Length: 280
Ligand SMILES: [Zn+2]
Ligand SMILES: [Zn+2]
Ligand SMILES: [Zn+2]
Image 1 (tube, helix red, strand yellow):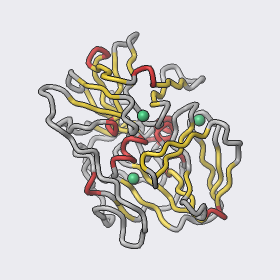
Image 2 (tube, rainbow, N blue to C red; image 1 turned 30 degrees about the vertical axis):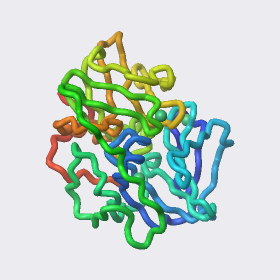
Image 3 (cartoon, helix red, strand yellow; image 1 turned 90 degrees about the vertical axis):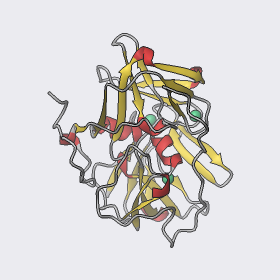
Image 4 (cartoon, rainbow, N blue to C red; image 1 turned 135 degrees about the horizontal axis):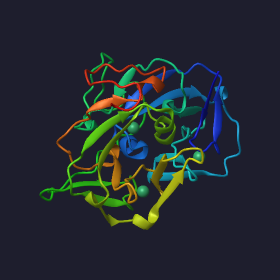
């Protein structure tokens, strides 16, 4: 049995059945909803899934008529969702410290240009052949303005431009990031706080601050739950979830940090430097 929770603890659940499958999904909806390189989902028979809390803060966003995304409206974490017939639960693995080994990569055709797949798992361009769901193509990109990297949330309410280069990009495996993004790890780009301009939707951003943390806050779109840039004017920094980018930033993550807190079900297979906590 494995218990999962959103970052703020308002929504918790228990998985009592062995998942029937587990996949890393690289589709743009997962990248945006999680604000990460990919989402990882365990497929669980609904009889083996149980909510442990009431669902007062659960919010559903429908990016397409046949698709939905569930998140906690208090903290922004992605939370489990169900198939249309209610018989299958899709549980974000990032909310669990332990879980089954992942079987496959799906929607690799939509993969983020800044993330390289370095493991040996089978890769599918879209869904694997035995799944009966529809394909949602990536948002087509138009001409990219010079010197600007654009990004947006899944519902498009929040749009922003990054005008300064990233100082560094960390893949962070800490438990707070994993819960906030419900993903294996988060990939955050750091630049100065005046290097990010909101084109629209800044008032639609909700900030959740973890009560016990000194700095840890999670910024997300209130409508769709996507992770969005967090500007910290006091410290002069902006933290941008790379999953929200629409343009190729032309750079890749520098390292893995907080690998001491890594999810037990995820193996790092690339050659990037790894730090137990922060780099020295
Ligand atoms: Zn929550
Ligand atoms: Zn996906
Ligand atoms: Zn949104």
